[in-house]
Image 1 (tube, rainbow, N blue to C red):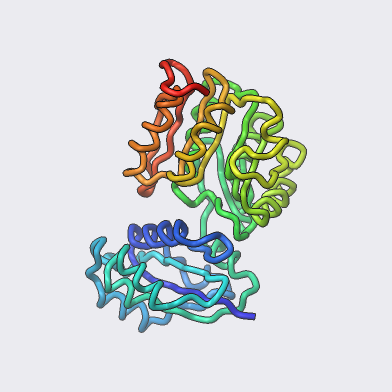
Image 2 (spheres, helix red, strand yellow):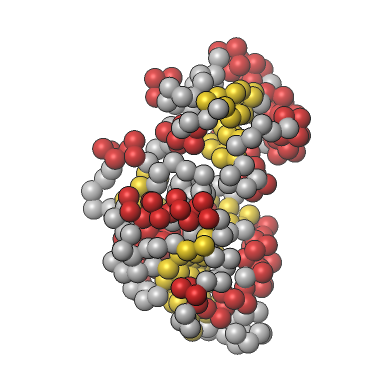
Length: 333
């Protein structure tokens, strides 16, 4: 069985922009996108085809794209990889890349058929551990290099979103670290938990049960495995839920810390439900927002009695801490 790998050697900004944009457009079971600094050849996993010298030279000659020079430093290029669950429409993918990064980048994109086994793992093996405050997100291949006295979160390669390498996940962890320096949250819930990174981080730091819900059943299965891997299975048991629509998540309780790392449109739609579930004085960590999304999302949540406490901007994505209270809500909750 084979799958399709699309690959582009480019600069950091372009690689991240393409990976982020494609991740928004496709479901997790359709596409896994990654962007990372191009490793030495010996560091590449054997399951990943090596870019040929002629490919790099060709891309070096196609230097002008919508986001600037495609390959400004041939000594330190970045690699964008797109793994498709099924054979994609190559012309359509090139058109999307052209919209994001220009025609030169679209033309330089290469497509290859690779063996399906370990294709997600291959996309993550080149990634280094990610530090966010006192938290570190890592893969199994980095266990031996972990720093002591940190909240280390290991994520198995999988189709679920959330390896810690995305600006939204890291932004949420930084906000969590800031919250934990101020207070100890009681009831915590992670809405749209993906691989479970945020729930695991809270559970490791607080040593208490953290509720988690995710719409995609495959992601829930993966997150439960990750919970066992991280030794937090007694504290985190993700359930299949759209928003908070699960008896285990509702249960007539309110939360004083809520995570919702999704996207702008569903965050707006969930605002009334999230507001009802957030205790007075409780805090809400939102992410999945492009910078231009922030004003609209803030306006929506301000109408339900939230105000902005803090904001992180990483890699073009914004992550927010909102607090319920401190102002008169425009809508009842």
